[in-house]
Image (cartoon, rainbow, N blue to C red):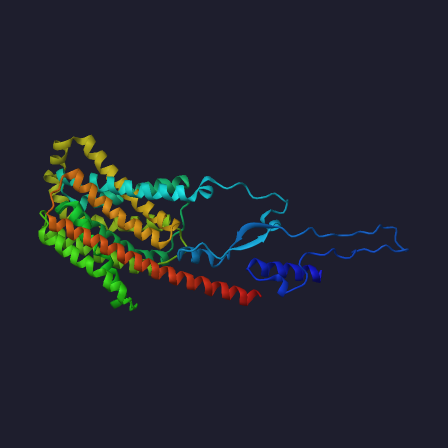
Length: 422
């Protein structure tokens, strides 16, 4: 049995890429001596137990405690080859065949990106069309969240996904996140209603600048100079686009800037509220709490106008059926594209998601200009292009920094494992 243990220990070292010959001379499992020897005092036959050669399944062995953390860092976990016997259950039944998503991960990820872009573009176009005949952004923002919450409740009712329990501590953690989410969402819609969609998205390209400033001056994190330098084109591009934007007004500009600040603080509070709950449940609870924050301003600011002539004028222009269906679908598209954005982030590395997010903004700006026929000056077009290029450079540099942090964490985890178990 001692030789068996030594050999298994040897195979564990070789799974880490170490040379087993330098550690032990027992390369395979030798036959063990008979456990019950023949004896003149016993009629029992001699029983010999022979060990089959060790085979490796190639399946991944993950650290139960570290794997979720590594996955949040963008890695796939620490993986070690394990014996084939470990891949089977007690009855010797092997694991079932891989699912379609496991066999074709690239196709599934590509589908996630496509649906994320598609739903985002459809939402922005339909949302702006609603504002053209129903200019009440506070109420429309409320509808966005209301439809999303209804979708979450139905999903919980059928068990897709299973509802995670909520307690007082988690509620306190998610409340600031939901407040910032509600403020950023409402201010974005105020800007969408006031100016062209393309201009709002150009201003919202400044969000990385606010994120960097908050990290440096609020959280005390040191931001590399290269990251600050990459933000210069963003600021310059947005300034150029704003100076000659034909649809410019201060309401649209200021509300988009407030949205940037709100979403920046949402990111800060989200990091403080990291829990073991899955992203789908976190977003569902955040939407429910944010809905409660959106009700008072919608009632107080736009309630009297809506009751007097807002609903009546909208129904007179497009009819009751189209009015209600438009409100429902923009709420559904809003919830689904945000949920898909979160799910896509979980499937890809930060660098891939950063590039995808920049391309998404380009798609939205381009399609909005084509669909609505917004005329833009040459300077606005150049400024928008410079701002988007700056965001792309910033995203690439930041994702590279995060990747270096992830690699360092991976090596620390691997070193800790080797030190503890070997």
